View 1 (cartoon, helix red, strand yellow):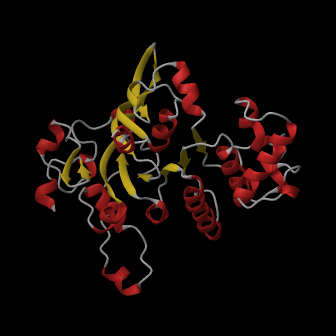
View 2: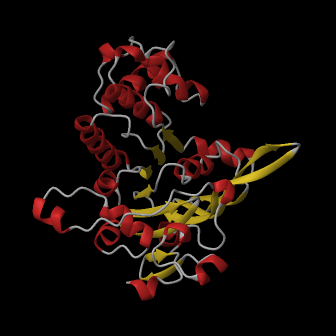
View 3: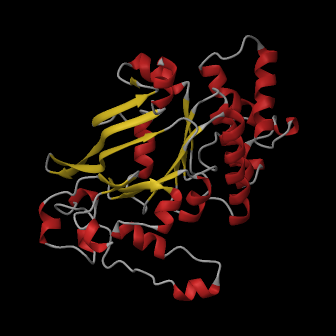
Length: 330
């Protein structure tokens, strides 16, 4: 019975997460930039949660704050049913949670060989008994991502963007993690390489039992890899549902607009598809609108939307939306 209870606990649970940065406004005044504002979600073991939204909406900050690369301003992060509070908790969590960074050019040290880059987490966490075991583990990790022993003594600048990202992925696997934050890992790569890397993430998940938070702004990429998709706007979560449900039945006006912009391969369907173009620019998180953050660009906004923040609630089984008028407009 206890085992069944453990199975039902999400691997990662985020409750009311907030990440504010104080911005200096001059004359000894500062103002909080609300990069992440009251975000809650859970990720089951072996699942991939896709996190999408425009640039600057707080997606990357969510990933970094979960890993405590930024100290959360407020809220809780739970790992396997345990609240991460003390330095010891976070240190242990970092042995089981890693990150693949967006830019394969700036995230690798140009002065280190591939072998040293991949082996660095092994050194930090003392995960080998002797030099031979270290070398064997590094070659095993490189094999996972399609690199061979000849690559070990070379430097990052000798590789293409796709190969560099493979090196970064091998490094993230070094501590034998359960959870990986993938921060737009294919956005800097050629389209032809993107599919290979996405398929590799899929294969690694099956082989190693990984759980992903997959951050991206490309909805086609996210659909391919994600079990569920969360949509963010201006630091807040506006919709969360199964990947197919979000694609076939988006309920939030912002999600509907994002999906209307996804190119369709079928010319007939593309002609029939009506683009929902948003008016105005995305507001600054320094001066976010009152009430619903999306109301300044929403065609359905009313006076009520300016008064109060809509609750993030379950409107259909497993489908969460933050919109005052969700039932009227769908």
